[in-house]
Image (cartoon, rainbow, N blue to C red; front, side, top):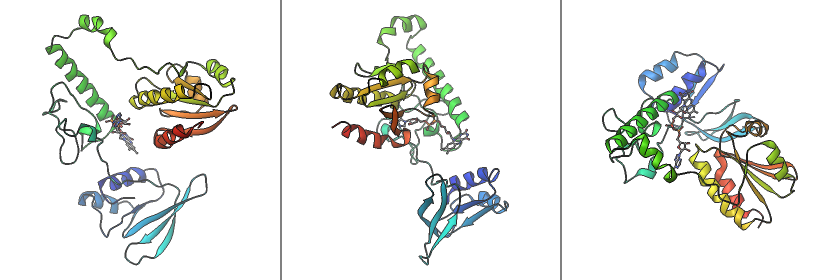
Length: 285
Ligand SMILES: Cc1cc2nc3c(=O)[nH]c(=O)nc-3n(C[C@H](O)[C@H](O)[C@H](O)COP(=O)(O)OP(=O)(O)OC[C@H]3O[C@@H](n4cnc5c(N)ncnc54)[C@H](O)[C@@H]3O)c2cc1C
């Protein structure tokens, strides 16, 4: 779904693997670059449908089976049988947080100084997709991260920072604190003994490298304090407990499970954290 460069790019990528790729465009033409549209025409397994709007994604409870389409001109509806749907409706850099703090271009990307990772504010460096309207690839973003780290070291060194000072300042470093009402768990034995208490249990899989996880840890610690006799709150560090990661089939963090009487009754991941927050505020009320 989509009519711009993102949709064209994804269709070209998918055509290498899929028998058939259909691009659904709401208007009568694509916005993708003309040269890219020529590439699309050259690939027989790619079809472009114009003037169609997706009104419903149909499924059988296990996977997608089709799309209900509406012709934007005639308003007639039809069904397109498909197995997989990709939304390629463009990319918006998540830079709102820095609005008014750092220079941001008119597309929302954080501006960098020449070929460095310096932003408009001294001592603040940026890297990755939020700075990059062109490449948007994982390896490129990771490389930019290295550049930003090198720029940060140079900045600190200029200020007189060294490994000796780093050692002296260790006690001031930010160490994620999960709070005293959440039980840290490092292996399946520890988790089993907590679950044996037969209280409804919120299990959070987290990593110290994940800022969203730290935010959730703080939130669940507050709730754990309020509910200390009614529910257990458990934090599993994925680096310490790979066997639990496997058992709970955790692919990304944060991942949250609600376990009651030995069974998982809810499963929340990165994509439905809002539902988790809603669940948490009503939990055990
Ligand atoms: C469907 C899809 C397929 C892709 N396939 C490939 C591929 O095959 N090969 C490839 O090289 N690249 C691929 N990419 C692109 C690749 O994923 C990105 O280029 C790469 O992840 C960019 O890394 P990043 O660190 O800049 O941004 P991200 O990976 O987007 O990381 C940004 C992080 O910041 C967090 N964040 C945002 N706002 C806040 C906030 N306010 N507070 C705290 N945290 C915040 C986000 O949750 C996220 O974890 C794909 C992308 C998509 C969407």
